[in-house]
Image (cartoon, rainbow, N blue to C red; front, side, top):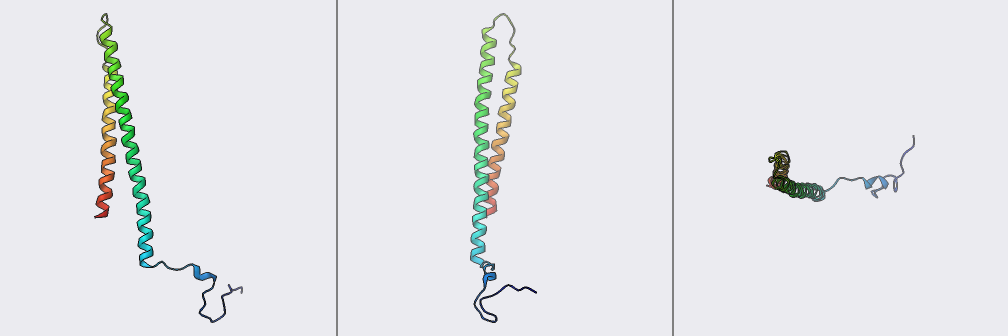
Length: 115
């Protein structure tokens, strides 16, 4: 049977296998803190990205609504026909609000986890 050599049979000098050791409590807590920190930063980054996307969608929705209004008001021969564009813009703003609420909840959950 093949055995893994140590630094001396029966000696107390650690061999190559001793590299695999248990972490101390402080090392384990430090590693956990580091992992939580990375996870927390990812959640915050994702929340910021959702907020930025929501802001961009709001701006586009406002521009579409203004364009629909302008087109309808400038065309005096036809009745107002911008309802569909304004409705779509309103839905985009509602979706933006949901994204902002979701990102805010993520941030709150992070602080509640720390308590």
